[in-house]
Image 1: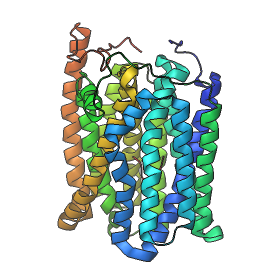
Image 2: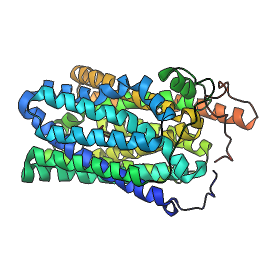
Image 3: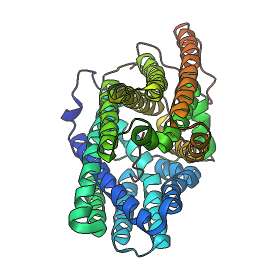
Length: 426
């Protein structure tokens, strides 16, 4: 169903429920992340922290072949309510868990629910607002999420100090219950109609859709590269800020807050874009900003230059994430959107896992400053290459050439006139 571009996304009652509820849930995730990091660091040190991060990431990767199939075959309300209640139960279990093994196991359960819920929400948004407003809804939703995560990170420390780790984790569990209630109240439902010859494959269908489209085959690998760059830099970022620049824990939090604010602005701006061409340019611009911002942080002689670089990285991340998410949804056929989003989420999380290993290794060899400069330079070069390829693809589109996309997997090429996250719980 098409909607006029001038229509406000807030005129859709279901979206007025979904976006604030998801933002609230992400705030709860930030609270939980602070609590879990504190619990695990007290009990096991760096090795336990690494195990916790692996527990957050591995279920998303392992569920790639299955999560998308579920989303594309079953009623969205049933899936979303069930996944949210599973996550709420896991959240309560985490509040009362004793010991690292129990904590890791329950985090895995939490993430198995997220592996299904994430693609299900993404596939439902076009049903709520129509294809033309997906970009605006995605950008606005990610901007709200960014604000909620910033607030949740600050609130997490306060709650742990006030109510302890258990109280903070119970707050997150309550947000999952709220999300389940919203999923039940949303009137729009995605009810996939089984085809006479259902297509086999979860990961294969999703990846074919991503890599079979003229623009996505350029932009999605670029996203993977920048996840590797960004997540690897996260490993050494604390050392750059505290050791090289000489800021304390408060300064470290302030720099991360500035970066998060930049991401909010980038996501909001991405939601204003109205064509695939403009979104593609936003992805490339975001990638370039991440690379150049990282170089600036590596060379920063003091606080001002450091913060400016961090804001640039955040702004680029917001643009890159929101614009890519919108392109993936709008350029995928409705029947396979669940598998496409699951493939994107899973491969992105796999890149995050690899980045953790690379960041620690490269940081130890080169030191924080050179790591930032080297990674940023490599990212800027990748952005330049992607820019050239995107320009060629857009010219081919305007020239009337068609993408070599398998029938029924992804929509055809759309022309100019057509319409990073450290909290992995939701």
